[in-house]
Length: 282
Length: 344
Image 1 (spheres, rainbow over the protein chains, first blue to last red):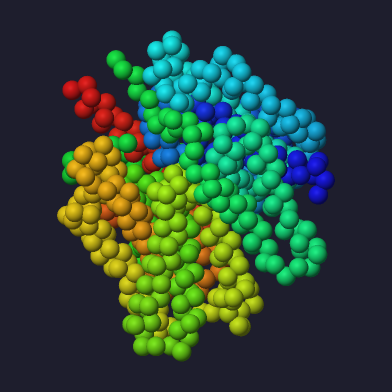
Image 2: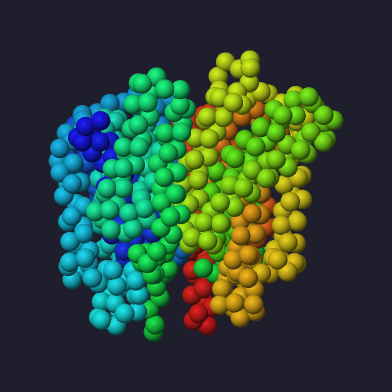
């Protein structure tokens, strides 16, 4: 597998996990990432189908992802609702919403539908650039410092004059834009169509990859490539005619991610206030 | 997160029912379905005759068991979202056990043996993330998500490889002999003993959680770890035991589905029952008794939407939208209740 194919193949998970890194550094974990990607893939496809332009479609996908993340952020950040619960709701919602709309628009059986394919190079350029740029944004900018403070110890950020809610909401929305790009590219750039449940767990893998990559955008990016490579091995072994069950290769990335977590443990890289709602003292 | 036990107070039931109905109608309107006609179809599918009622109870059975599993783990502060994997591995170990018992022992013993294997399978699959959390500090949310994927692939491998039935054209395990299957009350319907088993389990889970020392330790370790430490309660022990119980219940759900209605495992064995236990537990306010009406509600929704799906193009996926809105509604109610207690 050459590098271009590997990048293409890994792009949805890599983009989503780089975005999720920003959000988790701000202390918010998005269990609903899978749902945001799924909705983005659907609306990206719908707009492309209606307007005939995959460029408009990918814009719609990015907007969908950002909007869904923003709405769940309103619940978890402003209202202090539990992040796991809200994320679960987003996932259920996306599954039902896209499924019902897809069937009512394109028939009960979901006939095979293909739309104009989005060229890969712009998304891949964004992907390759986003790893170092996200690192710069998080670790070398004033905004990044403030965001990391809200994820590590929100009272400190508040005392320094920052609004924890605003920082967290902007980080979550940015992560949503990445999730939208990931879902949109999956449908428009890779599949050229949409099918129910097209994301097939990629959002969950992206969440796991953030931990795997120790909350550092460049490491998360490399981890996504490694997982993509491991997954691609199944095709290679099949072409060799080896009698290894292909399910092992599908499961391999998850097993490797688990083993890495076992070896590195929790460590100190995790944001201190991850998944904890912050209520300002009155 | 605080879960308001007050949600369970009798006076609030009316409010909750009205909210649920409004959510249902809102979802129907949003999808452009005729409200009256859709509600009639939903109602008919869920409760019009003995077939509808049986369908509702049959769908509620695995939902109740996985809901109980989620409730116990979440009470301990362990966000087990691996019910899906525990359900699948439970079913798998049951099927493996059934293939060893091929010499067909006496029916009740054989059935019990398979169910025990299912419980063990689910518990093992939940013990892994519990151990990872206690020993290595690995987040339970992440590890249970990963283990769900591994379980699904394990299922795919097992039913197309070692456990595949000799005469099956597609990847399926050997069908269980009728004598091993759980008792069906009426040969015309799908309702089986599993429904009663689930109900009894809910009562036992309530007793465990609210009337035993272990239940107290589980609840206090989840609600306020600091207080637990002050009382010299071993929080990690409580959390691991809660996870084991949670996995056992999800495994039992897989087992009941296997020996109750499916009879054999295929790649489609998991119908997301493990995942759907989360809204069941939340609507039931993480209380085992509360999970019973909650599971019935979602079970009726599934049975009804099967009927609705026959007549509308939106199909049965609508059920997930309603579940999501219900979860958001429950969260909003909790926040409102917290605000009220905070200001008064």
